[in-house]
View 1: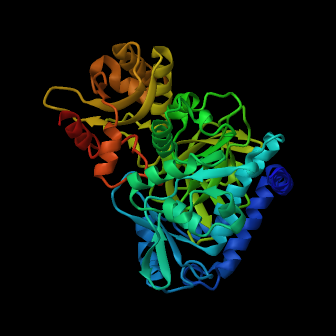
View 2: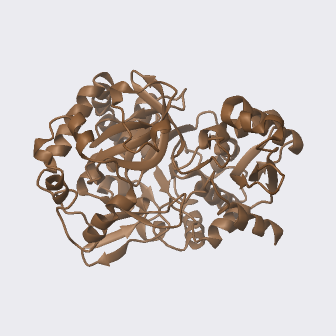
View 3: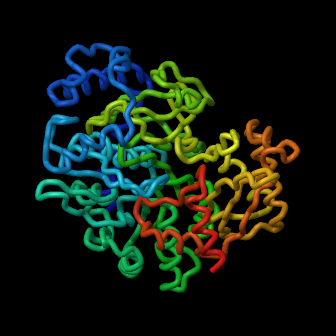
Length: 504
């Protein structure tokens, strides 16, 4: 195993030189990918519609091709699902990632080409290990196995030649042999659509394995970890897996989970690395151990544009190239990919923290915000305020969501929060006061609406019992996989069902 670990580590490290290349020449790399994507898709139905043969520059591309969302391409996707090819992308597309829809219950089916699998998603997974091996040369991660909690659904058939499932299901089904060899449990268990049964099976199987790494969404890894500790009677995961050294996580912000993982894995040597992998593509990796910023991955077959959030509702919004972005400003991410998404608005917002190389933080969702009263509260604001309130009251948050309380007669509105704590604050009222005060400090629009309670009163905060969010997600059929608790909503579609659970 030691020899195998050395071989894997050497292989992964070779990639570091290519990563350093796009960090040094980011604009050249993006220009090359732009030209490659356009020329590859010239003969597709989409390429002919917009005359890709005459698109020579990104400026012409932006003038000719409008920004798309899922509703704009749904008709094309529906035809591809039925087996038509060469529509958005020339190679055959047989896989479709079913989006859980964090802001809507409507399913979306994102095309996943062979190129997207190999050049983007799998390359991102390999690069995560590459960066880990580079940052920790003495690692022994390949001497054991990785526990991966797969999707909440099996692969399903649209037709004899097309399949769908959540992204993790598709990735696991198509893993290269070496990755499958190092993973546990087997595919049948990992893709079990019964989430609770799957967690039980994973726990029973993996406690007998030499597990050196974990991967997946923090929420469901915590559920698994707690079940493992119940079965074994151990106090923490290191007593079950003494060689555990690495966790690659993504899907949701890690901030609310950091303390919980430190309790589950009480070791300063445990290495955490965040990745930003969505159904539409793999976009970023945390490449430094002393910073939570993500490195924008520029050679995965994706051409990036950035739409300033204040221009999102313009009739013909103008996007920026990579060389035009600024530090600290919020941008909606617009992508063109090797799966046939063209100028596609994925719904996430980011802000850059560095321009050399390009590093960023995920600041929220274009549709996950509260702006009922002009306050423009985004997920990034909420995360900062909750972190401050938790720090000053010695609390740990497990899950939360928030939405508006509308004006009623002469009463001002408010924000209403449902928060489930892993560790209760030492003073709940003070927690609520700090949450409000920090939001006022970091968001001037929120502060203006809170002035003398004219538009917004103090937030209403519910201290939810343990497993409230688990029960709610289960009632929605949203356990496991890439399903995430929606953090903010501009209406009460999440709040009201949660409050009903609290009242029952």
